[in-house]
Image (tube, rainbow, N blue to C red; front, side, top):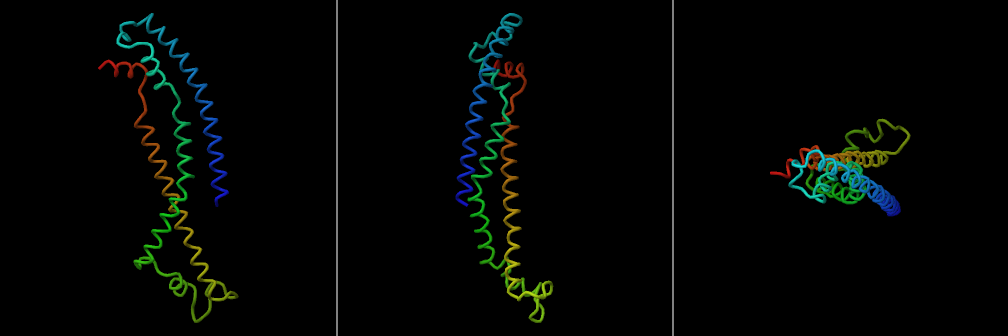
Length: 180
């Protein structure tokens, strides 16, 4: 398990490095576009941008035109994998607490009710009755599967709400917003 996390951390580090290099190139292109757009506004609509200087306009232009999805996707994937230990600890704690409170039947009770009748297994005739206990314990994997799935959905919901809440408007809208 530790090797898995080491590999994931190395891959996330490599993806972060690639993202950083990509973002540097994008920011250079955006700075070039901002200079062109600033010159256009200065020539054709100087009154519209009279309250701005070039660095403030470049910041607005960058906020409007910089692609945001790759950063959010990388952050979501990093959160997926780095939160797995915490999720597993939380799920194990919930299961232990539910067993202690009597909310979840003991595996032997479930095995006796569902699979064992008169000392024989109902489904698997050639296996000993203890096999039902192992089978019922393996069913707990479904709780972990759905717990991880729900936590990942919560992570996606968090990042998508944040992504859409911080979405900028069009360039003209953002310039007008800075006037008021």
